[in-house]
Amino acid sequence: MPNTDLAFQSPANAPNKRVVALAYDGLCLFEFGICCELFGLKRPEMGEDWYSFEVASLDPGQPLRASNGVRVEVDGGLDLLKEAGTILIPGWSGINDPIPGRLRDALCQAHANGARLLSICSGVFVLAATGLLEGKQVTTHWRYSEALSARYPDLVTVPNVLYTDNGQILTSAGSAAGIDLCLHLIRRDFGPSAANSVARRLVVPPHREGGQAQFVDTSVQVPNEANRFGPLFDYLRANLSGNHTIKSLAARSGMSERTFLRRFESATGTTPARWVTRVRLQKAKDLLEESGLSIDKIADQTGFGTAATMRHHFREMLGTSPTRHRRLFQSTSKQT
Image (cartoon, rainbow, N blue to C red):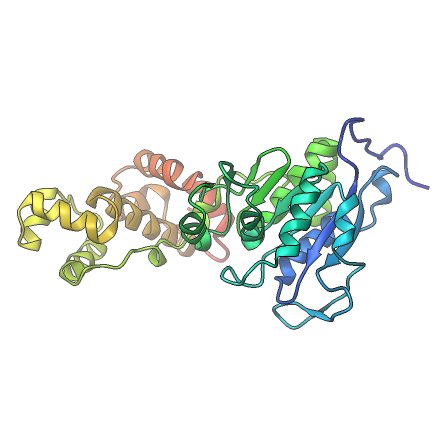
C-alpha cells in the first residue's frame, strides 16, 4: 500500500500518465537511462496516479543495441504511441542519419492525438524532421546547435539553455540536461514537492541555475582562423591582462583599423572585443576549476580587471557566476 501521507496527486486536467520512450539501434544509453530512471522506476511513495512506462521501437522483433553495445529490450512497436500521453525521444543514433518516414508519421499522429513530445540531446533532430517544430524555440547539445540551425532554419534554436518548454513539445540540451527537463515535466504534472522528492532520490539538484553555456569549452568553438591572424591570436592568448585596442591590434597585424575590423570579423564571426572576452572567460573557467586563486586574483590575471566586471561577463555569456562555476566544477583545488 502506498503511503498516502507522501503520495502526490496530479491536477485533474493533466495529460494521461502513460509514458512511452522510443528506442532504436545505436541510441545513447545514458539518455535512454534517464527516461527509464525518472519515469519507469516504481515509486510507491508517489501514489497510484504516478506514470506508467513502456519502451517502443520501429521493429520490435529485431534486437537493439545501444551505442556502447548494451542490448535493449522493448515492449512493442510504434502502435504504443497511439495511447501515450508523453513520448520520450533520447539521442538519435547520428545527427546525419535519416529519420524513417513511419517514425515521423507516428509522432505526428501522436501529437495530433494530444501526446506531449519530449526530446533529449540529439533527439531534437527526430522531432525537427516531423515539421512540428517550425517557429518554436528548441535546444540541443551545444555541439549540435549550429548543425540544427543550418538544417532547419525555421526553428528558433536557443543554444545556451538547459531545456525549452513549448507546452506540448519540449526539448533538452545535451545528455544530463535531460534530467533537468524530465524533472521539469514532473514539476508540471505533480508540483514542486514531487519533483524535489525525485531529485533527492537521484541526488541531483531539483533545479540548476545557468544554462549549458557554462559547460561549453570555448576553445573548440573558435572558427576557422585565417592564417594571417594566427600570430595575433597566440599573442592575445598569452597577454590576456593587456589593454588591447583596435588601434594596437590593427598595428600589430599590419593593417588599417577599418581593414583589420573587416577581416577579423570575417575570419572569426565576431568582434575583437567579444573574441577576447570569450578567451578571457575560458581562461577564467580553467583557473576557477584548477586553482585555488581568489576571484579577485583570477579577474586580474585574465584581464577583466575587477571581480565585478568578471561576474558581469559570466552572467551575460554563461548564465552563471564565477562562484557557482567553481562550486560546480572544482574538485581538488581549495577555494580561497
